[in-house]
Length: 428
Ligand code: GDP
Ligand code: IMO
Ligand code: MG
Image (cartoon, rainbow, N blue to C red):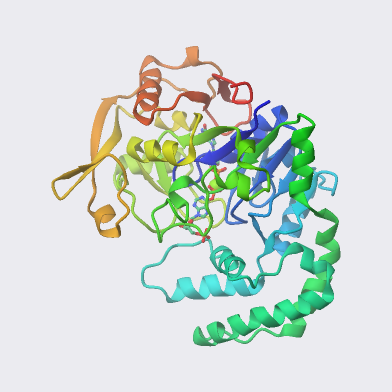
């Protein structure tokens, strides 16, 4: 039986949360494998709106949910998110949520550093300010505090000293006050009994789950173009967001990744700084932002909007090994008389079928567009392909051709049930 790995195929906010929630009743466990609470995944079920940043979207349907080792975990945020969901009627216990005991923690000092650097920078990345980058730096620098350390006071004390030996000079350079080691230790000790009940070797649990023939649904955060290797560096997040990371970030081997479902928005958005060849600054851009309600879930910032970029998604299909896509937010294009699709780029007299890696080349790109007629009918809430206007079907088919991957699912509104299943990723 196949597992399914859901990843964002653009710059994030493609609708991963909605699709993971919808697919989770076909799975036995839902697993986050990278990123942290920089993610913002919105689920709409009737008149209830759930906003998840750290918890896997499967928790809302009561599925066993795992926060894998590849995630950086802010324990204060985790406790808060659990409480918030509790107030919406979703009770999260250690039977429902498992936190990898080898995941690294995000501490207040990571958030301080993230925000102080952004405030001081001239070319801002536009981070979410939640300490993601600095936490991954400490993980790779082998000085991070991990979930399991919370159970070992002695280790914790030594690790705090080691961590502060690195952070104190950095903080002083940025004009930040020193961190009080004893205070941090006390805070972590107070947090330990609230976090440790969820802590387990997640890799072992997943191994057992897979061996018993059960199905895993991986939930990616961010998008392929925000990947620290493959994205528009340095305007990226600090983790690998591509499907291959599902294996390393969970402890399940690469065979466990299974069917890769790329979530693709029917146009393009990006929040934060960095190149965006098809960005629009006109009435169409305004339409996409307003009708698509393109405001960041985490920071409330307006998302930048533009035409669908098939060259970008074709690159993403290759980087992720995408088996099929879920196309979302087609309804946002309703009523636009003409539509453009970017099929490649031109820069300094040269054609590019992909996004070149150099910053200068990226900034110089002009999109090459193909145009087609739009549709005036509404696709909002359509539950079958037959309900779609002919031009909408044409648009979807052209996207499939250009990106080289088939549509497996189509989403036509924020609501859970407004989802068209073309082929079941778990059966493919
Ligand atoms: P994620 O980060 O990939 O999970 O996506 P977000 O939740 O940040 O952003 C997607 C937004 O679009 C959310 O507000 C969803 O409720 C909404 N959404 C998802 N699918 C559709 C759709 O097909 N049509 C419309 N109009 N909205 C959608
Ligand atoms: P979901 O999972 C969109 C962007 C930030 C910034 C860059 C680095 O909801 O799709 P970071 O705080 O990660 O160091 O910021 O990455 N970013 C996202 N953009 N969706 C997200 O997550 C994002 N998570 C981070 O805006 O440009
Ligand atoms: Mg989001």
